[in-house]
Image 1 (tube, rainbow, N blue to C red):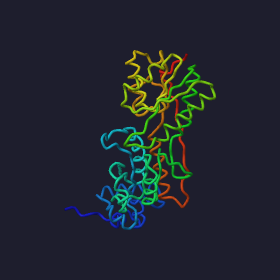
Image 2 (image 1 turned 180 degrees about the horizontal axis):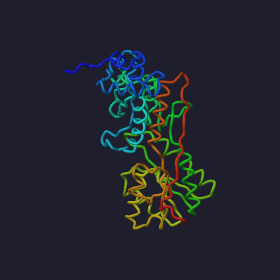
Image 3 (image 1 turned 135 degrees about the vertical axis):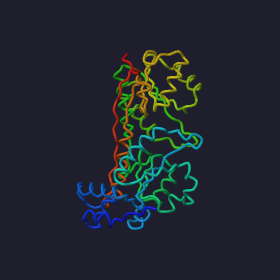
Image 4 (image 1 turned 135 degrees about the horizontal axis):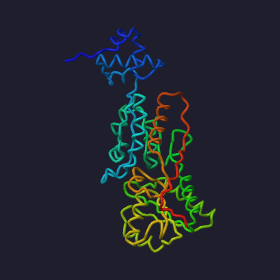
Length: 339
């Protein structure tokens, strides 16, 4: 069995002090980039493998950060776009020597009050929450894990929160609709469901942003709330209202797809018989549906920025990082044709 190489042996080979080598391997201290490179190269050559458990005893840190995500127990892939946010988090945390630990709300929600192991034991140095929570769970998680960052959630305070500026998204889309010459906007939004009883702030803020532009421009505005499974009901409610001077604004790509299917059932052409724009072009939609007009948002950046906020809490001083609202970019497409 191969013997474990020690920090003392690495320090001896390099002619460095043991504390200096230890700081490099633990990702702490102010050591030059050249020295860090030498230490890592020598450690790799000598076959050094760090003992995370022993390091946690000394530093009182596990160097694990949890990310709490919403999941529908009956449909594990309900929110695939969260992957991009998690990817951004992982990239930033890994570069800083931390490990990301996925915590699914559906798995721990009923055991939080009973102190789920992930919260009862000192498993995580901090938690990044990526879902809207009932007030009791928000308060409980903050009590159990004081080092929290709230990423793209309904929580919004002066510090430790990061989200997309959704009111700005609504206004930007509304401005494009008005500039294209449409006279009415129908906003297609989400309705709360059993696994997500709280409406995400984005659906509300987008609608308010749209409504403000409609008031300024003096054009009609209405809202239809639906799940992304009520196809026939949507078709019956939406299609009779569609005209060449009407633009449908879908809150997300799920609902944009519903509009596409509804239009097909009614033999209506998007961009000709009515306009369509989406507030959130998620994932690879610009590749699978390149004609769709809407707002692009870099969720990898959201994940990276939220991880940097967490690192500032874990490794910084007493001052907590200020909350940040991120902007989006307009993607023209062709479904919002000029009138």
